[in-house]
Length: 86
Image (cartoon, rainbow, N blue to C red):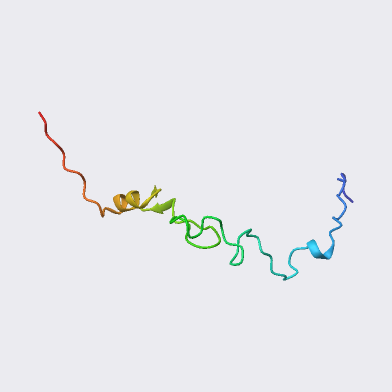
């Protein structure tokens, strides 16, 4: 026999519709093919109708916010020559 007794909460009364694991598909996105993101087709950063964007992007341990930063991090852009004006 236990020396202490802790109160136990009652089981939650959840109806069948709101239970998890009932194998019904759930659409968690507010945008879909029939209702595309408002910027899709207008903003080049938005890649699909769900509103997924390309930038910001993780490149070689740094964050790139646009195409120029991505190329600079990858080393595809040559550094500007140092001007010696002395």
